[in-house]
Length: 276
Length: 310
Ligand SMILES: Nc1ncnc2c1ncn2[C@@H]1O[C@H](COP(=O)(O)OP(=O)(O)O)[C@@H](O)[C@H]1O
Ligand SMILES: [Mg+2]
View (tube, rainbow over the protein chains, first blue to last red):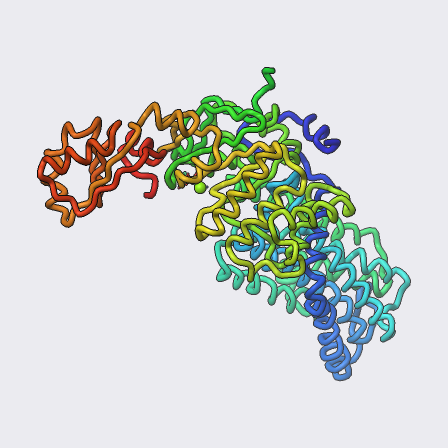
């Protein structure tokens, strides 16, 4: 009932349900629900950690032995492992977050009726959107922390600023969670998920994850700079390798805005789709 | 004495684009009663229930639920409702128990309160020994009962049931009816939709008959039958369609009203046996003659010219 007082305060035009903002307390219950569901699938939970680790061992350590040093942020020469690891951290944050907010979200939204059940309670579409994003970020935080520890154990974290790689990964997760959630509200069937892969694979391969931006012709490099994953990779690499500049706020703001806008779009789309 | 109605619709309307699913209906649900929306598929029952449940915006007219406006106070209203939707939407990734537990959490209930209530409610719907089972393997009737138990976890003042027994076998239906009757005795206000006239007759104190987005009649089951139908009905079945067609003109005057259905002819009359004798004297040879009391099905037929089952 205390929540409803806040809801009461915002008088709104007719013909729209739940114009009130999400309540943090209510969206937490969406996270609780996912935690309950994963309690019986903890092994699925582990996969998110192993995938980037395998990439790091194969491409970072394996291929790295053949490659030699290359210029990192600020132009300093670094080993290939040190160059690739933060890129993989950023890419893993993207992948995990996109999976949770597209595929997993779609199943619950389209087939399982999970949200129809939630919306019959005090929860609203905003709570659902925030809860799902919160869950994706929580998971992402655990993975990012584990991966960063592994990097540190392999001697790949050059700067104490590297600690910020975890919140940076959460920010990347947030940007892609917003994007994923919003995009999923336009999906009609599983066939449409081919488009998700079509977008993710090139992002993964070409966002300066595996080689520096200087390898691109100038025009293409500018195009790559505009992608959210490049921004994330740039942020992670600068933090981990200790190249701290004020301009790092640019990717941070970019990713934050992407997440915020995405969640808003998703919430208003969900209101129309789930509460016709 | 004059407590405000729990739910009230005035000229309540629902449009999907240009399609009108609910067309200016007026109704009132009083505290403690079991109120029904009886009507065939597509009549607009679910659309009405979703507006009452504050998950579908009102397109026109007025609606108040628990004295509040769904457009402004959705979460506050929903916190005091129990909803059993037409399609079960239990969480198939969770166990029976976790379904109850998480649903209670959606209402912000403390875990200790949920633990107590969940066990009580599972016992109430006779699922107390299925706590640790997954939801998928449960039978249709069990799923329905679990959905009802789940809807009661917040101790709602008003329970909305959209076709509570559609798709269940007779035994499962009776069990659900019996449980709902218990709830009614406990003072829970029930609002339900159905296209089964026997369900409406069994459960509803008062009901409205809906057809094509409109309300065509309102009253208690007995009032509706008294007002719109005769006391008894004679059902005549014939061996062939021709015989049935030929019989029709001969039956005029044998009762107060004659209705021809695809498989039989109904003669509405105050005195069933008398009419049946009259039919035999007229030289008609129906394959079977059945005299029965009027039901809500007859009311619907008389008012709309169609049967409840599509
Ligand atoms: N989301 C929707 N969009 C468009 N039309 C709808 C929607 N929901 C229901 N309808 C239409 O409204 C009419 C009434 O549907 P409904 O309320 O589900 O009826 P009932 O529950 O009585 O079977 C039907 O013709 C149905 O096709
Ligand atoms: Mg319906």
